Image 1 (cartoon, helix red, strand yellow):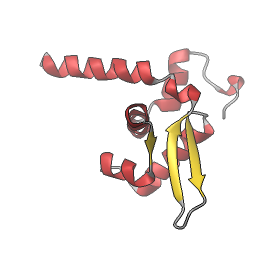
Image 2 (spheres, rainbow, N blue to C red):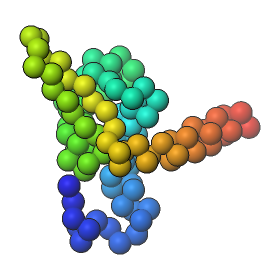
Image 3 (cartoon, one colour):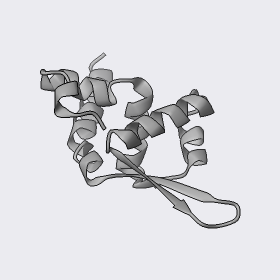
Amino acid sequence: MLTREELPECPVATCVQLIGNKWKLLIIRNLVYNEKQRFGDFIKTIPAISKKVLTDNLRALEEDGLVDRQVFAEVPPRVEYSLTDLGKTLKPVLDAMMEWGTDYKNNL
């Protein structure tokens, strides 16, 4: 996780740095509206993403304290991803983006 000094001074730039690529937004979207996801669930619902890019983005979101990774001691191993309490605070942001996107499409 980055320290306060490592983050941009501008709050908008901070938000963009943490969730500002299309893959992170789609991963967070899945977790906001589905609570828990397994790796394969992301692959199915974000078909254009490669496994490597998904892994890299999940790790980055985990390092930034937005996503939690839970490994179950089973054979084969099962891993579930969910939002942390901090990550859950992004729900209003995603809701606003969904509403804006819907309005935009309806007014074309």
